Length: 452
Ligand code: UD1
Ligand code: MG
Image 1 (cartoon, rainbow, N blue to C red):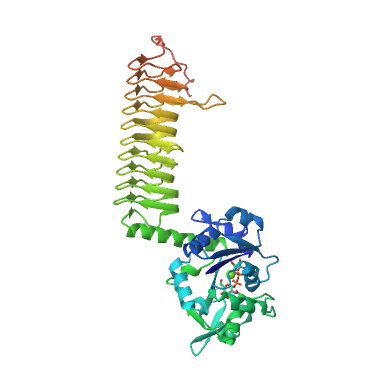
Image 2 (tube, protein in one colour):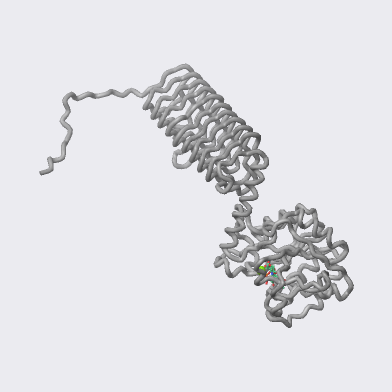
């Protein structure tokens, strides 16, 4: 089939310079969610009708497998769909979606397409308060036409079954119907909804199908609605994680903005944010208030509260945090400990190595069984270039050490506390800077005058 996504409308009530369909839900534009759903149906063609916001929308979304049709000016949903017609395959049906309705499930759309057979199918819902929507007018149980709120009589306004806007139409007939639309109605627009009565008049069947949940058909017109849909989406993601066996301290306090894959017996405490692609191995536990972006965490690793992890590959049985920051290019082998206020960037740690307190390890290769003492800093930047630090297996680095890169500390070497290492240290050696401790006995410290 063809899929047409209507996305030319303005979205005035967002009060934003960003075109409405580019506002993010779960970290991605609304329109990207609709496109994902469309693509999952493997359609023959996808055409997006754009207009308001112009090229900004097109540039943000790209051209991967989609055609763009510009609607300028925006004269209504029927006029919008007419702009897409030249890009459609007339021999297959056309599914109409809205760019600002992000949560429709592919299953629902497949069912709608099956309902249409060779005719028309409209996705409808019953609402307690149908105000604002087009009403489904039935006679003898059959759908006859759709009347918009502003054109409806009092008795029509009492109808609670509404048009979600999502429909499947036979494309050849559709192009005839669109050509005959008129804009003599309350809004002076070319209503797509008017094709329903035309189909009935032409003897084409019109059926209705309903989604499993009303939220599948909710659109975004304001920041309030955007926030509501975000919560619905996050609740759905949390439910799926729980159903897969993940323990969530509170399913209302997790945000997944991308794809989170979790093995058996994973547990996640409150207020964690997962962005991009995150993989958690079996028995991983994530403490409260962690942010993980594009990261892989292997089996049995514990991430304590308040950690920030981005583009990092964490091995099994590691202990990270609390308050650790793993930046892009971090690669930790098994049983590595990274403690509080330790920052790691573009660095690898071998098995069983530890940096437990207050350190910066950047552009480094750290071997196995290394101890990086508190306050250790790799001085990787000379103001212009980044240089590498190599710390070989079984090295012991005392507290408050500066490693001025490029520098290598050989296997098994020991660095005394408070050393500035600016030359390579051979394997097995002790490196220290000669300093003296000066002691002046009975020192009289300056004192503030006594208060009267
Ligand atoms: C439309 C339906 C109404 C339905 C409601 C569901 C018509 C005439 N009415 O009303 O029956 O109950 O949606 O939300 O179809 N758009 C364009 N170009 C335009 C106008 C709209 O691309 O010229 C796009 C919008 O970006 C949006 C969608 O079409 O994605 C719906 O437009 P909107 O203005 O929200 O239609 P409604 O008046 O709410
Ligand atoms: Mg609307």
